[in-house]
Length: 256
Image (cartoon, rainbow, N blue to C red; front, side):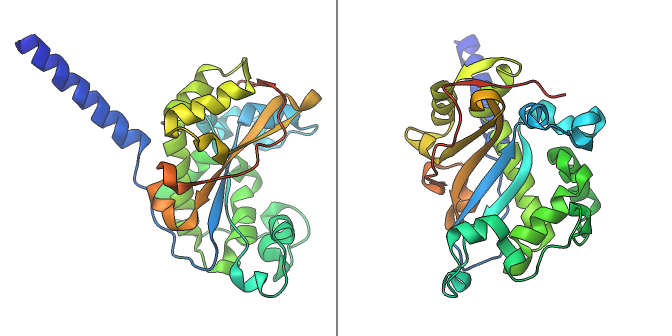
């Protein structure tokens, strides 16, 4: 009887620990006027393999330590703001140019965008979760997707880092890590997402592939309702996206 009780207590403790890890608190973002976010997560090995001229973070393993945990951050993208919609801006124009519709993008590299003023702890966490920061990706993401909406860099990236950790700590993250260096069926990847987050949630998952025959995973995108952001990954926080361009068999190259 005592052994059974101890086993049950141990199982409960493990469940609580996993729940805290996988369902970490998602900080709110103080912003209004749009309906959804797209969380874009890079599969670093596939991204690097698909580049004809791999950037620094692909050539120097010390810059991509976070890739060992699974996905890394590309960006968190608000949908078309209502005020721009009323000015005749289309969703396609917003996806392509974002805030650069109002303040043109500086010519040259991403590093021409304004530096990020982040706390030291958040800066370190972002370095880990976003290898592309070595190429000033963080500057570009904030300038393009958030600055004109009054979203601070602290808010954008504090929330983004928590979202990355939540996905990587989920059963979906475990499935992808377990299959790193191998190929999986596209439907198996979608099934793993639904097993982690609920039946039907696979419609919130967009798969982006590159390479020959679009068979190498480079990125996943997840749709999130803006007014449910802090409840991610609850089922009703997720918003439908299109399925993406990946072939039936998807290669998951191991991180470099």
